[in-house]
Image (cartoon, rainbow, N blue to C red; front, side, top):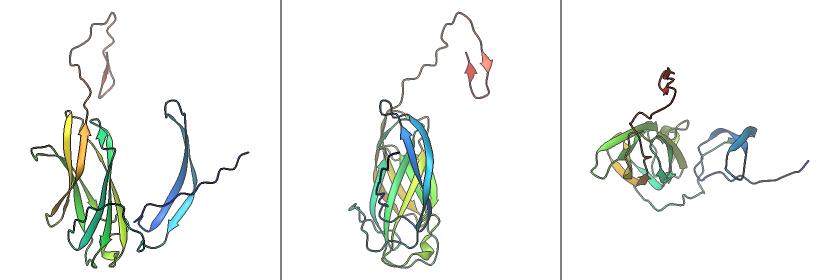
Length: 196
C-alpha cells in the first residue's frame, strides 16, 4: 500500500454546495482513462469574499463585476465540448435570479450557437450579497457544422448587455462524401449510421 497525500485547492468563487471529489487513473502513453472512483464529498458552506479572481476583465453588467473569463480549450474541433468559466464579484444585492446566455459567433457577428444559464446555478444571484465572489462554469457543445476558423465568445444578460469573452480556434476535419469502393457491401442500417 502507498499513501499519496494531495491538496486540492478550490477555484476562487466556487459556489456553496456539495461536491464529489473523484480520482481518475489514466495511461501515461496515450492519456486514456483507466477508470474513475469517487474519493469523498466536499461541502462548501458559504460564498468566498476574501478570494480574488485572477482575471482583469472588469466588465460591469447589471451591478455585477465580471473579473475573469476563461475558455477551455481555446482550440477545438466541431462537436467538442468547450467550458467557459466566469468569475463574478457582487457589487450590489440582486432582487431576482439573473439569467445569461453564452454565445458563439463568427467574425461577421452571425450567431452560431447559444447556451442559456442561470448565474450562480444552484446559488443564484438573489442570494448574493455585496462582496461575494462567485464562479459559473458553462459547457457548450460546438456545432458539428462549424468550419475551420476563429470564432468569438460573448455573454449576454437578460437586459441585452453583451460582454466579449474571448476567441475559439476551430479546426474542422477533412470530410469525404464519396462512397468508397468495397469488395463486399454490407449496408447495415444501424439507425443514425450505416455500416457500409
